[in-house]
Length: 535
Image 1 (cartoon, rainbow, N blue to C red):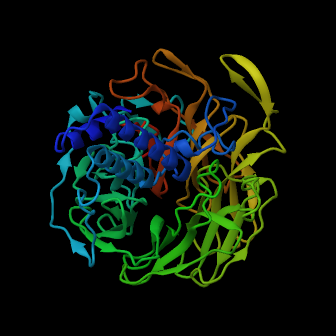
Image 2 (cartoon, one colour):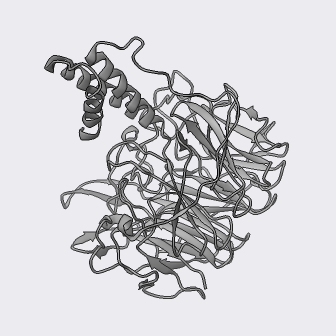
């Protein structure tokens, strides 16, 4: 664990020198803390792995991409636990825990930061000398051609409020295996062709993607010095921020969407308890949070008992649709049933909820999504694990030897025309075999883009990969689909992982024919493939 040990040694530089036994005690404390964090966090270490058809991993055995750690939002809680444990362990080793460590700063009232300039992303950050659009599609299946650019920002949560403006909350962690560190912000003003870095206020890490109503007006959930939940707003496109402490008990904002600059709704984590360690993304402590006055006041309401909601969409001030899974009672050790999704609908801004109807075998992997274009028309990204198949059961192999056969597993897209109460499930065609999709964007009720990976083998550099990045496009509400696949460079550019080209983790389409997507780079990579279909 070089990162943690280096941190311990930095503590040692300013403390009396402990003996070897004390350092061994500190290392043991760090190891124990990391184990606790892995069991209680949202990161890859907290999930149950199952290798499936084309070499991905599943969250709780459901969904190829759920445990990749790429293009997924991961709460910085685990990093907070580990870093705090490192600090305590170092102090124990030095023998002066009491009074030696100053408490982390807290906010009693909103803090407004001064205006700071953006800095253009230097070429040295990515180490790449590739012009935007150097790689093109293998084929053009839609009127607009998609371009691929390998010199994007760090991988992270993507938000594009307009066709030209995009933000990425980058993961600034230095270790590919350590916890995430969402304290970097990138901005593009030319449709994701070039990027600049924006200053993030000291002590702030993001816990939700940005929710923007204009190119300059955005909000997000965050943590202040790793321990205090805050509400972040900017009216200057990220050049300055207002950091407002959330009331005690309101939790940590995990998802946010804003209809106006003052009216926002989303999900908040009111309890860090993870009752099912093998299913870390299923957390009954998630509740509905809303503000109607720009964050000065919040209301937090629970979802019905026995449910764990994982995503929500509110197309109007009163109508909301949430998607998640049922959870068993406290005495049931079997874990949640991820193959049985639950849709909840509210017509009173989250004060009460009623259940919608999904086919019995449609559930979720680690990245469910629901989105509504208006109060009537909604779409969701679900997952199926048998019964039913695309082409039969999947063979699971290890070192080229088939070890077992598991039920088919693949993503589906659902469409509703009555506000989320009833759903029609649309499967993707055989030209997109075993789709494992992570993100869905629908500029209109009939036009949707779904992105992720599929079991389409490709060669990336000197390596063979069983999966490829793919975008599925429908213009008739899922009745027919077109596949968009991408060429990759013969040699992977320096500083970029080969499997960055095997999966798309983020997608935003602020208008028809104007989409931006990010590949799924390893944590620690300083560049990410960017896909666009502008023009």
